[in-house]
Amino acid sequence: MKTLILAAGKGTRMKSNIPKVLHKLSGKPMIKWVVETAGKLSREVGVVLGFGADQVKRVLPEWVKVFIQEEQLGTAHAVMCARDFLDPNDDVIILYGDVPLISVDTLRRMIEEHKKGADVTILVADVDTPDGYGRVVFERGKYRIIEEADLPEDMKDLKTVNTGFYVFSGDFLLNILPKIKNNNAKREYYLTDAINLAESVRVVETNDILEITGVNTRKTLIWLEEQLRKRKIEELLEEGVTILDPNTTYIHYSVKIGMDTIIYPMTFVEGETEIGEGCEIGPMTRIVDCKIGNNVKITRSECVKSFIENGVSVGPFARLREGTILKKSSKIGNFVEIKKSTIGEGTKAQHLSYIGDAYVGSNVNIGAGTITCNYDGKKKNPTFIEDEAFIGSNTSLVAPVRIGKGALVGAGSVINRDVPPYSLGLGRARQIVKEGWVLKRKEE
Ligand code: UD1
Ligand code: CA
Image (cartoon, rainbow, N blue to C red; front, top):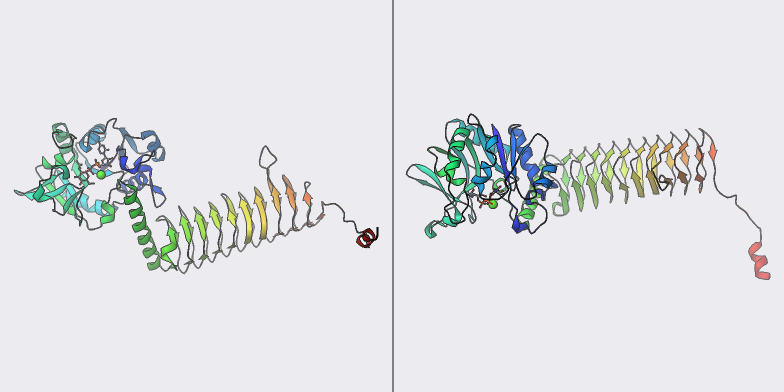
């Protein structure tokens, strides 16, 4: 079984410099949805590219075979461009780069049906507004497809449409392709003509409109986005996740969330994020590509590409950037930014800090306003803070620097030399007190 994905079209109606199939649905380029679905059926996947082929290629896995259609002369011509991919002894499924939600289940049903023996098996659907689709008619014991542009007036309200998905027998397809002509309204080589020239056609039906919806405009794209978002939220509710306000919650389809987690309003959970059980997320939080354990609390914060272990609390108003690791039960409070750093078990950074390129041990206290000065103008340098150290408020740790186990850094210090374990590090001007100085000045 092979799969061929047609994706050469420009997508003029998207009004975009980006190839149509790279526009994202639920955070993922449309073509990737289709390639992933195809990959679940077999590893023999071909893609026909044209407009913006180089850009599209970059998002494809390297095991996908790419064929180029220089000029878009129609769907049959597109398949012709991938002739070398076809095998007379193997069936081929035709998919589209701009119909992203076709399901593995439906394709499997088509494959099963096709095994009963046919030149081609087509997927049809009954839709309320068939405009733009080719219509499927049953005449003289045979199925036939009539393109919308060639449809006689009295057939316009036929509601059974050609979804465009087919399983072809390889030998039939290879035989028929050279015989297809472009003598039609659009002067294109129609793949539908292959069906009309077939001896035996089998039909499979779907009633899931989402899986057959092709994207030609941004309006359709956001319609699909909204439908998919609703579907995801329903699935999560079903699985025991509380989503307090589905209207303001955006969760990508790829996200996984455990039981008894509560998602508060105005929250975005994106990409390859996984959230464990019993967490409280939001309100007003954005989480992208994070792995989050159980019983974690994140409020009004932004977290990107971070790992968060059980029992951690984040926010309000924290920012976790890529490469942040928060170990068990650590606490990150308001206006704390963390980047490429590990924060040990039970460690607290509760207020107004920047921690970058740092390795912080367990049960450390990071005082309000602590800054790791990780950038010397040329490169990033690491800061090490060992277990149980105490960093006084408003401290600048000039990296590279190491604060030893159990050491104490006095508030307001600028630390640019290592502080050994269990030692006091103090780096600030000694305070002066002049008693009665203000009164004396007034007298003068
Ligand atoms: C096609 C079907 C129609 C069906 C509809 C479902 C044909 C002739 N008609 O019509 O019966 O109801 O899909 O959506 O097949 N493409 C290429 N190269 C080309 C032309 C198209 O790669 O030269 C790709 C496009 O990028 C697109 C897909 O094939 O993804 C469909 O092409 P399009 O021209 O949009 O066909 P429809 O008019 O929608
Ligand atoms: Ca189309």
